[in-house]
Length: 441
Image (cartoon, rainbow, N blue to C red; front, side, top):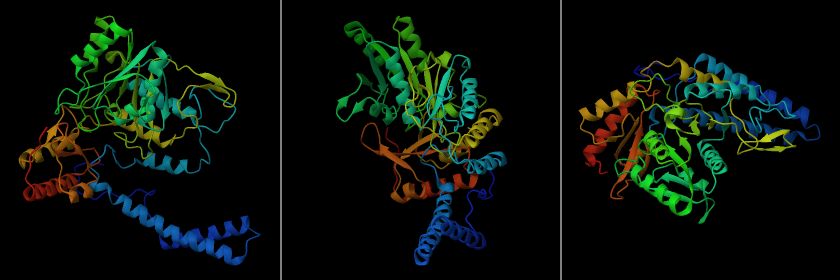
């Protein structure tokens, strides 16, 4: 869909509610199903079940209709709600006929169970190997339950690879990073949090990082495990990954690096004016993670973690192969996710990422609305607007780094239409007139 059309977005077949005729037919089939499978139940009980199901159908239809109505005002989180292509829509329907898909364990090893979609998981991994310039013969990865698990796997793998390791990450890193290495007040791994450069710049402070690593190597012979971010949660800032790894190599300090590229890692390599994540070789990285539901817009919450090396793991007889993943049972929409990600990575026009960003930034400037945008980021940080704006547009609010002002961010995605951008700008203008404020970073 052209993001600058003024037409409303049509609901796909999977989003539409049942009409009355279809609903009555469904309830008749449900009644027959219940009678056939509950022959010992009396008529009153069966009738109560049918009434319960009828109420739930109405509730479900209302939920779908009201939920999808929120799409035009979804600006606070990095979920790209692009309409399914006909091919993706068909595959999503086809997946409903799969009674069970469990990609348990390593995607490259087959256990005794055949009820998995690992063949498609491997095809998906190859798309990412190509994007990040990885050798498909030596690389490895798997589809996780989300970015938090991917980061967890990267961190744990780092500590497996280095001896006497210490984790380093920025104060602006995703909250899952600290969660991965702590259990309440107890540390699971040694770690050091490095400040971001400034209240305005969420990148990790390179000089402080190198100084901290050098000191620990000298005094404790600790090897650094790095978690660096390509697109921070609040502003979309990208750590200076290449400078950091080149500095460490120049100092002769061995390290393990995992890059959290949850959002921007999904941007195709052909995009202009975009924070495209470099190849793993260029970053001197060992692993990287990318979320499915962010730039790709896959409706299920999944992520992929990629490694330059094959993963280690113990053989588990119950699985029938090695245990190389963090979670055991795993699932994702194996057909539609593969198609949607392939279409985004390989078939996107070169201005897919930037065209809405350009239009929105021009409108902010024309109307003298205060904002901050990190270089090439699709995230616009603004003074926290009124509660009705936050609620209407599903915005995320947070304290500024100086703790002196509450901020919010607006995330501009390819799925937004020109009319939706205009509506947001109009409401921001009204709010600014009622509550004048400028951004304080």
